[in-house]
Structure formats: structure tokens, C-alpha cells
Image 1 (cartoon, one colour):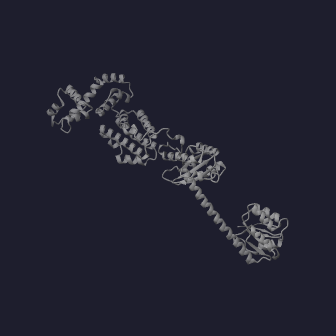
Image 2: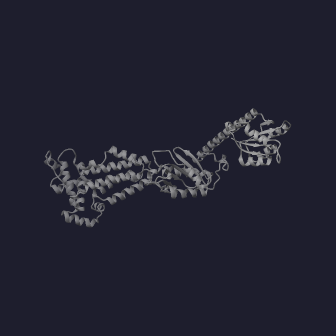
Image 3: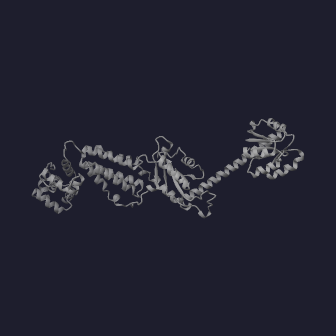
Length: 520
């Protein structure tokens, strides 16, 4: 507590200074005054907590000092010192909140009691003010919370009193960049306040695990965007800003629209999954212009796994990477929940794995088991991490399939046919898959194998159907489908062309025979 002593008699001032052990009473004497005008000036300048003031002083008497000090906003405690004949002045001073006066000569015990009472009065008042500020802050925070969620009674709000009378607003959310931690170790709202040199340029509250900032006015928004562009989008490694992740919504022009900016920022916070490596900021401009519906073809028709399997078997790394990028873009524009995207990606990987192992049984050890695939995809925070996992697995497969004994692309094509004969194979499709012109590939194929593409494919299919016909596990029409013929009559025609007998006759002739057929 700061104490100011005001009396025109130096002996009285010195007596008061040494009468009590002021430090033990938690007081510091901040000044002494010998006239009324000097007292008023020091009160305004020093803002003491308690003023011991004599009624009779030159220039201004004590009563005038009390009155003028109150008019200047002084809220400290006055203790009047007076003679018995000045009691009427002391009574008038009470109209200005003076509740204590002492008569000369000053009694030590009375003075100690007066200053201790004043100290307690001030502490009580400070406690009340602190509680009032807390109540007001809580009420203000509750109002801001309702505005952000569009639950406020806007007609009842005093925008000027709430300091929400700006021409433009923008909502920013920020949290820890480390997703496993919700504790933000750096006060970004404080950084923005310093950048704006204005404590009223923003509002800051917390909702859930996110800190919410409402920027107020063009200057505050401009300063924030400069900070986001230069220091947060690519922060220096190890700097405090490197620990932040933030999103921000569109600028809006009224408090009734603030919830729109908040919704933008909130949706972007949910889309952290799509961030690239070391990306710390998502802007409302990063939101896809148009979302694909949840039942879109790319989700329902799961064609990615088959195409990826084809590119892996053909060793076409370029097309594999291009297809994964197409997949990334499709998922980015999808309205699917992140959990469903993870499940979808796990399905793709498992289907690719099944397709590769079906054709190349000796490659099953290259892939993690299905549970490990699902766990790996679930534990990744970002889509790019999952796609990196895909690329690693697929390149390992391509390296394993690309045996050094196959010295030409045509060898790769023949092997691809032998492993995928059951599919609807076309020369044009295979040419595109391996990066060839269809007409050129047809000529090279015939020249190298001595057969055209369709004949070679038929021979592979018929050879495999002969193997399947040697047991009774499958019906003839099932075998036709298994080797790539959708029409059983067409299968009969082709089978008889290459073997001279029907499938049923072949089965009767060779039933139970222990024969091993190999495809050409």
C-alpha cells in the first residue's frame, strides 16, 4: 500500500513518518506535501492508496483537495487530520466518502487502527472489483460463445458496450501442431495483440480444445494475414510459432455473420487430415469449392485397387503415382468423414494385396497382415502419410515382380496376361498400361510369339480351363467365368476349337487324372 502524508507543519509530517513501523503494516510512504495544491498534484501523479491529510493547509484546504481529487477519479482512502475546532469541516468531507478523521495531537494506536482499517477497506474493494471483472468477463465470454454458435439474442446486445462495433470480423482457431497434445504452449492471441498495438483489436476465448480469436477491423485482419503468411505457414524450426496449427474463416461484416466465419474455421480444423507435410495454416480459400456426394462413383465402384494392381504388375510407376494423386484429389473433394476415408483406403490396400498375392503367391511376405495394414492407416495423422505408405509397399512389389530374368517389356506383358487372363483383357488396354501404341504392340506381339494377341489369350484361358476341368469342384459355366469367358456358349466354342472336344467330354476323359498343365 502507498501512503501520502499531507500537512503544512514539518514536525507533524516527521512525527507521522516515525510514529509507526510502516513496513510491518504493509505500507510504503510514497511522498509528503506541505500545501493543498502540491497534495492534489501528487495524488493525481502518484495515485496513493491512502492519504493522511490536514484540513487546514495553504493554497487549497484539505476539503477542497478531497473534492477535486474525487472529481479527477481518485478512488483511494482519505484520513482527515484536524483540530477539535475543525470538526465541522471533517463532517462535510464525509460527503465525499471520507469515513475516518483523527484529531491532533495524533494518538499512535488510533493512527494504526485507522490505516489498518483503510487497508482492509481497500482490499475488500479490490476483491469486489476483481469479482465484478470476473463476472463481467464470464458474461462476456458466454455472449461471445453464443455469437460464435449463432445462439445469441442479437437484438438485446449492446455492440458498443461489447466492443463489437467493427466494420469487419474474422474468426481464427489455433491449437497445438502436435495432434497428440492439446496444450498450446504459446499465447498466439498475445502475439496478435502485440502486433496490433491494441488490446481491443481481438477477442479470445476457448471452445473445446481450440483457442478462438475474433479479429475486429481491417487493420487487425491485415496484420494477422501478414503474420500467417510470413511466419506461420512455414515457421522456423524450433520457434514458438512452429508449435502452432491454425485455421481461419471468411471475413464477415456483422456480428450476426460471425458464426459463418467460425464454421469455416471449425470445418477446416476437421480437415487437418488433408494437410501437406509441415503445413501449419488452413485458410477458408482452401475449402473445396464443390464437395462430391458421399455416394460418388469413386467410392461406390472401388476401381482404384484394380488399376493400382495393374500398374504394379506392369511396373508402371509413373501411372501408379498419377493414379494415387487422382485418388488424393478425389478424397480431398469428398464429403466423407475422415474415419470412412481411412476405412476406404484400408480396403484399397487389402484388395491390392489380395490381387497381387493371387497372381504371385510368393509375394505374400512383402505385405503386412490385414490387421497391421488397418492399424498403420488408423495411426497416421495425414493423408499424405498414408499415401507414402502405399507407395512404399507398391514399389517393393514392383521390385519383386520385376525379376532380372525378364529382359524385355514383352516378357512383362506375357507375364501380366498369364496372371490376369480371367479379366476382360484387351490389347488396347494392355498397350496403354505398358505405355505402348496399340497397333505397334500388336505387331511386336505377333512377331515375337508367332501368334496374335487374341489367340495367345485364348490359349492361356483354355489351358487353365483344362486344369480346372480335371476335378468336379466347379460346374462348366463357373469355369468359363473363372477363365475370363462371360458367355458359356462362347467358351464351349473356343474350347472345342483348341482341343477338338467339348468341356464336358474333356472332363469325362480326364476325370481323376493326375496331370499338371502349365500355361504357354
